[in-house]
Length: 424
Image (spheres, helix red, strand yellow):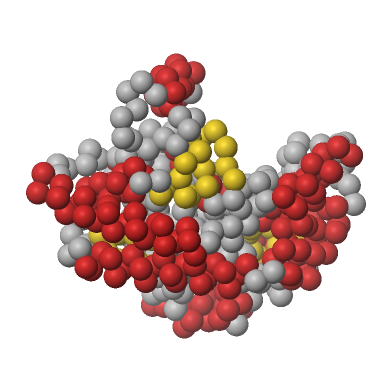
């Protein structure tokens, strides 16, 4: 896709002058194929429009916040109504109590809630709450697991120092022996075990949690007095309306939530059991915008739709239609395509593609056909998608596989991406 004279290209050039690196975070320059748009104009339902007017079926859903569709009328109406009454005030409105009551009524392990703005806020509060509760320092988390962009957990080393990650032990996700060894190493200083709802690391196949691993994590926390933390920022409300590990009968002490909690409006939460209530009350956490009322109104409406609609069944049905169809079409074209993770949050990786050249090429071909997929990050289904959307995406995929097959002999290596370089 030629963007030589595009508005997107002009904005990139302007951004280079005033934004370090040209862009940051998920949209950092170099993380996606060069022909992917950097800037967007609007979203509606399951679709995005870039600043050059091109329309895409969006399987990234804003990296997760879009659960019911961009601009969902009922959710946005609740937001706008509250915005007209009062949003950022000197203190919270009664909506903070209503939202805490709603979440503690929905999430089995939760007796209290603290609200913040993004997932990193929530996971970092879980860390300090666990340390305040246990009066210990050491935490255990899985290698490669993403828990946010704070110095204690960020993947990139730039700007951090070794002490930022002090008192942490890494284990292998789903490996009981590795977890037990980490707990033994922590000894009597273990404050918490952090767990992703499933293995959703970037660049590698996703994996469901092993119930034996989850049970052992719960047992080890009970035996040592440490807290079990499930980081549900990415998967919360997409696998179940309860905490994700409740599907295995495991109740954590703390869980972190964000992304789609208010269908794209900025709010996140730390939920906890009575066990950790005193510790949560003792820590000092705040933000000038953490009491904002409009996102809380949007979250309450989102949670109403979670309770009263069949959204989860839709996500599962549409996700299964997409995943099964992609595997069939890839096989017919002669490609090995690994489709891993829950169907609501699938990841697509090609066999024999260590430098992602196939993935980048195929993703670009999908983009050219109006479908926004990601070459190395898990994607997301939203309830605004339709069967016709999925069937259109599968038709685009079939054509993209054919284009990849034609180009395969001439594909050169993808230049090593900034993120991979930073990771070493």
